[in-house]
Length: 123
Image (cartoon, rainbow, N blue to C red; front, side, top):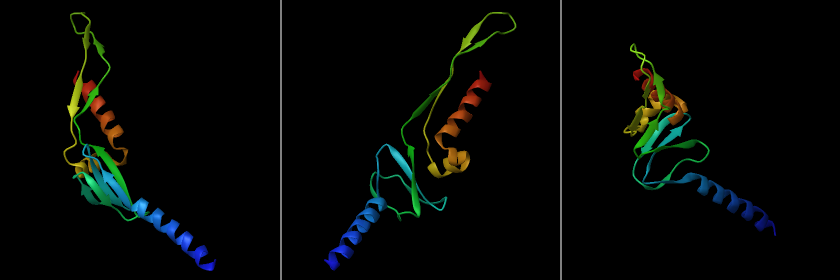
């Protein structure tokens, strides 16, 4: 009876630690492993990977070609004709470490906001 009271919680804790230390890298993504906010590893190959539970965290980025489309804008040039301008961008994150340094913690949302402002300024 006494052994099972110690063994059962130890097994449960072991399963929780094992489950939180394993993660899967999908073939359509790249993964950054962060330890206290600093990049310690970049996982680009699909498959099973490991991290230190509760110390390291995983940040996933899409490796596919992404697209961004802005709402059409109405522009009135000097000759008073209305023009509707539409813009879009297609991009892929080549280096996830540099991408994280450039956009910070905001990730894709911050990058898309910056891309929207660039597309709007060019139209």
